Image (cartoon, rainbow, N blue to C red; front, top):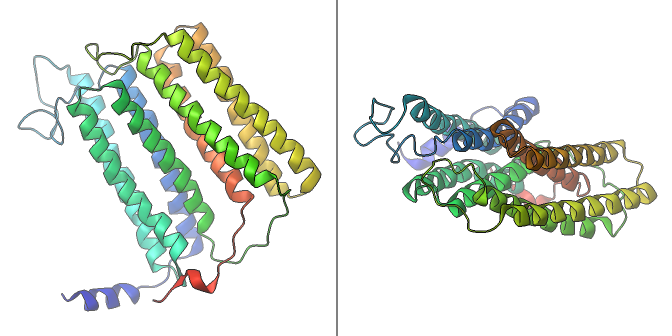
Length: 314
């Protein structure tokens, strides 16, 4: 079928409802966060090399098989994480398809939606490289950081769904810059967290070399970033108090404060209790919640209107 004919048939499809678009975009956020959490389960259960190769699980087999060196449970945990990647990809592609079919077609929205399946492909390749490099700590760290980026972008996607023009939100002029600075600190916080993980006991496989730095020192650096981030959130709250009465913005702000405090408390409990496996996965879940909540607050201070230049001809 000629490409022109295929494009004409696609363009003739009905415009999906805003409700459906938003539901799928929210599903993207959930699945992007979930794949990060299941990745941590793979790591804390020592299943990172349960499937010894990629894209196959074992040489000559896409699925787990009986193997003298790899326990069946470890194989299925790693294989299950790979299967979930397929689900994440389907949801991501659905979000892009809905954005493409939405009318009027908007560049910003379509580009964000396109980033979702592209990000899944990038993550799949990174996952394969992580296995090929035998779970070296920095490959796992990059894998997690890309997940954080995908969670952030997926929240922006949810924010971009509604094509209706939005009223500008009144915020103090210093707030956007402060939030930008806080995002930089958040990136440092996440990187420090991956380094703590890289030096810690949960490598994904007992034979994997660890980052040769003191865990306690790295944990203190991680905590220092947390305190700076909390201080910047406090400053943002003071600015909001003097410059806006938006209930939505205030709700998003308090959600960020709540998840950051909960995540910080969980991190201290982890440190004091010897980093138990369950708390590691909960901490990864908390990290995705912090990223999502911060992204939502970011969106709330940057309400956009659709301009003619952003519209794409059908």
